[in-house]
Image: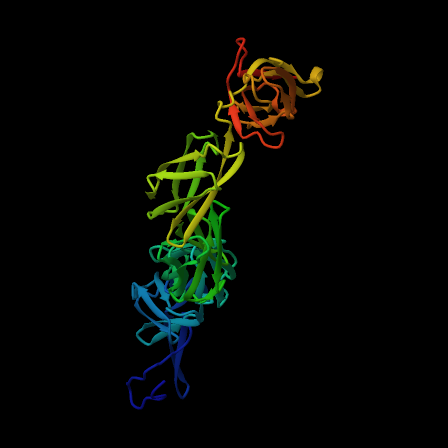
Length: 558
């Protein structure tokens, strides 16, 4: 009280009270000697409380969380409480509304861009009254995502991998969905496509069919959180292979060459092994030098062979990479053939055979023909030269005094450095006449061949008649078989039989028939091979008499 006494008959004193909220009664007594008096004063003390719920929050970085701030009036408090938030550094905090009258609530909204543990309090003020909530803890969680390695080198068509790592920050435990963002031309897959529990790894697999430099990133998403790896550079390498020239022209025995070039694409540094294959497989031999190239470089393809056109495929291989290039090799040459190869010439007479020149491997030259004949024989050509391909008639003339017998005439074709020869047999016979050709007088075989009964054997029985009444001949029967079902054919020939002038002789010839032939139908032709010598039967005859066949068919049964 102030003052604590009053002088005179009257006056005032001020009673001041303080205390916590509640209703109080204060009695003031005054005394003057034996006199006393008292007065009663009632004091009503009002206040408010402030609290937060919840007092602990866990939120994603960049997201928001809320807590309810409650103001409660005490002992009839009806004042306006102004609210302010006091966040730690890095935390953003807002209140809505920013004041409460008497009792009420306000929403505290908090957020932070970075993971961490933050605190915030809210203070309510009304006049001289000021209260603050307890500390509100805000746990901001996040994750990181990284790739290792960030640079990959891979062959075109092959695949490479990088490890994608998701790491929890400040207790993050969410599920992170992963997506790959690849540039055009690059294929990228992830396994697994999500990470649970906040941390883990996924394998990124990339590939491209075409050489080039590509990029890819991986994005991880969990709710409002989204992060992307640094850019992963994928260098897809390859090589090209080509030949120059792609067509090589040469002659037999002379090597033709082509340069095989390997060109690196997009930084390819591997070793390319070179091999060659040839079609057709025989007639040409090729080598490569060197047989491997690192990065870029050249190799020499060298081919040598006999006349013909060939396709050489050169293959370059390096790991999973394989490329080819093709070279056409033309070995220019020609061939000589005679039809027939044996000519019967009577003394003081002439006969002819046809000499044919065929070009191989793009041969385009002129072939000059010449013949070397024994004394007593002359050989002339018409024409004497042939360009590229064609035929010439070789006329052989025997002197009247030339002893009958077989004589060899060598026919030579020459075109530049190319020289080929063949032999034609001239069978000189007496001027009294030419030996008549023999004929088949009978031919029999099994038309429905049962292998079980025939011991897998087909037999042809035949007879041959010597139609010349002056000369003994020697003959064989040749059977040429063709399978109409595609298995393949074969040829069998009998032994030589001697046939006197005007006489006939019989013989047989057999062939083994394999089990896979069952069900197949075969056709055949019969040809007499004959001559006037036991050691040589250069002539052929398909003549028949007595309505004998010179061809037929048979079917093979089990």
